[in-house]
Image 1 (cartoon, rainbow, N blue to C red):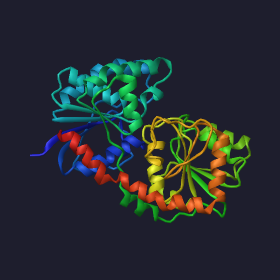
Image 2: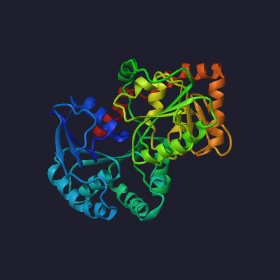
Image 3: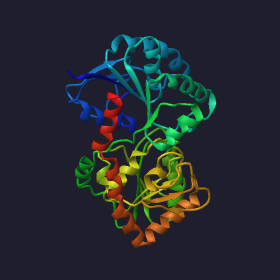
Image 4: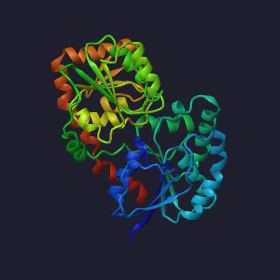
Length: 375
């Protein structure tokens, strides 16, 4: 008889944690009796037909923080009543709080929570940040196991929040599927050197820095993604008169066909948990330039270095890509110009890109999740 596994996440919208859940559902469906619990009806990724789905609620994404906080014990009680699995696996902060509170209220499942972003940075300011930091500090210790998707996040949970039971499991990638999708034809570029980035258009991804950098570079920038700051980004592009140099492609169900046909991937995020798009760009054979934010890029592009290092005023030509100081338009331009003008450098990184991506193949990572579920 299959072990019962519940997976709790807010929704299956088009985000990184949601993508990981979609992969887990597909890879684990034959080994476990899985029930998926959602808190919102948004579904972007496919769900295998045999997966049972329950909705704890159908919440409004823009609910006030106070309302979200007050609802936590009621949602935890509902989850306790509905969930009969031997193991509960949750993703993202609110689902994690609900799962742990359900355990405190008497739920019998082994509780595994998954932290997706560096909490001390993600929740560093304001009342809402204080509340989240407090909940993480006092609730996470009651989880049976905490999985963090990067070494940086593991270090943060251990050192900033006193968590002891943390296991690092990087995000899984279906490299065969990426390769197949990357071969799909698309005509989106011209003869200009082409930089590309993928990600939600919000303040954390910091697209405005890329737009500012491309202003002085003889190349084009393509941005795949959509979000709350799209209008502000369009206004910046108009003000800088860059409509011919910056193209917003919007959200794409298959970003890989664009990645595979660009010249270089560039990434300016201010903070990350584990940036999926860096692995996806490497899997598509692209040279990568990334800001050296505190979690993710360094352990992907410079795996032998200390994850606690963060560049201040220099460009680092690491083993698998180029790292630049955070939020530095001048150093970003320096790296972009270097990758444009040095064919040898581009070829070196192209040759190593897919080799590095193979370290995150789905079969390897799924085994790590199975070890945690079966522990």
